[in-house]
Amino acid sequence: MSSSSSPSGSGADLSERRGIPAAKFIQDVETYLSQSGFDSNSALAFHQERLQQYKVVEMKLLAQQRDLQAKIPDIEKCLEVVATLEARKGTGESLLADFEVSEGIYSRACIEDTDSVCLWLGANVMLEYSCEEATTLLKNNLENAKASLEVLVADLQFLRDQVTVTQVTIARIYNYDVHQRRVKQVTTPTAIAAADS
Image (cartoon, rainbow, N blue to C red):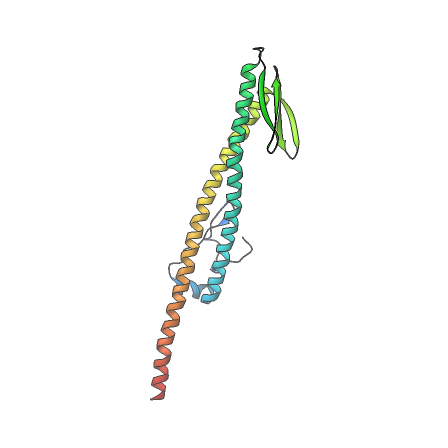
């Protein structure tokens, strides 16, 4: 998003959050246009492009949020399974479990006393951990996922605020342009009539 230059000419007052530039509220459109050197159409085009960039970033953040929201319950379920295995360790009773082999394909297993579990780490990688190590790793992953989700929610809120400010700015510039055209239409026929007389 930083590839577009700011029409206000000064990037110093432009703040950002994690690479998302803040939208500047335009109080006085006429002053803004005169300082930026743009006409209404150029300013509208710039802000509409910025709005589209915000929408693209929003889609990416929403996809990340969905992924994290799906990942957190999976991690919690894995923690429960490891805790169940640890609780049954030493009791001598086996655990009968159904597990997913592939999407929609399940298998049944009889799990005897075990000191280790295998965890999928992603990218078709599975490692064997002791139950204690697996619990530590899963708790750490759960904390990281929850922290990432909180940051994503804050980023999305910031982004929605910027979208709102940009939409208001577009409306203000458009309304200013319509007003200027009407004033020009009113003064042009009056000037022609005065010149004819």
